[in-house]
Image (cartoon, rainbow, N blue to C red; front, side):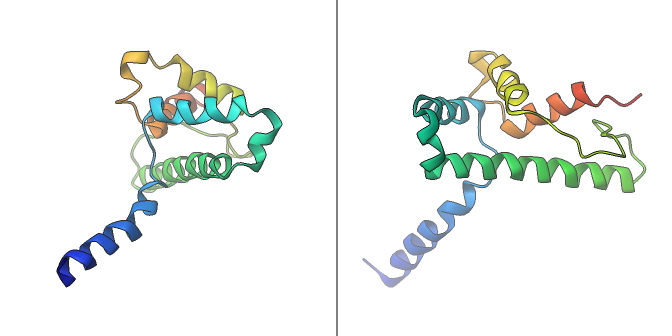
Length: 126
């Protein structure tokens, strides 16, 4: 194996975990959630529990940044969170929104898009 090939392989392995922080499709996300739910209280001991939590938080931070950019540019925003409180979405609301995505669209629907839609419904702009 050439040194260049080794370098490319090593770079690929190093960069692979970075992709996990990005939003993923609903189908795979729900598979992971259901696997954790099956573990009951022991799910809290799983690394995947904390990975999923970080992914949800990353989606929220991305949407927060998008909102701030649109607001600063004077453009209409997709949702209008309350000014006095931090927008909140319960785990049950979020899971219900994920499960509401039609099965045939789950592979092509992004978790961030589901969260955006949920925030649009929960905090509409008037």
